[in-house]
Image 1 (spheres, one colour):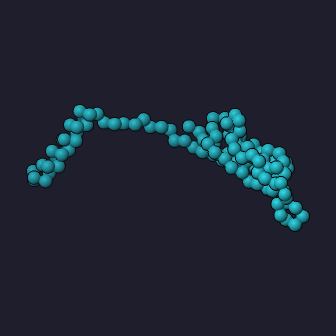
Image 2 (cartoon, helix red, strand yellow; image 1 turned 60 degrees about the horizontal axis):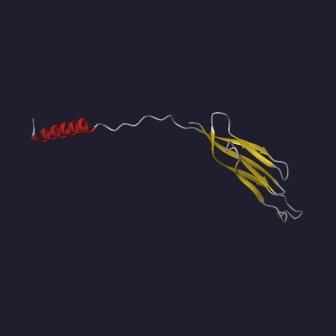
Image 3 (cartoon, one colour; image 1 turned 120 degrees about the horizontal axis):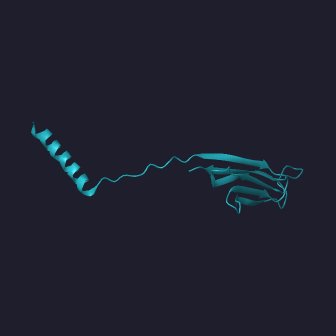
Length: 112
């Protein structure tokens, strides 16, 4: 046996002995979480859109499409604003609403 292989063997034995004394750290394997995006309906003018997560999932985020009310010249009407964009009170859906125009809510849902 060469001196190099002897040193390697001793080093490996030292690692194995240390593992035996201190134990080997292990982690449990968690199931992989999956996500899906759910679209709500396009709202009627001034009404809410709600994108609800399906059973077995929970809400982790969301967003919206906004179709603002426009004047005859193509500009956004005075007073138009996005007035709701966030999770529902029950935490299962993303809710959006424009003051005068329309919105479409998007929910990001996760399993696991």
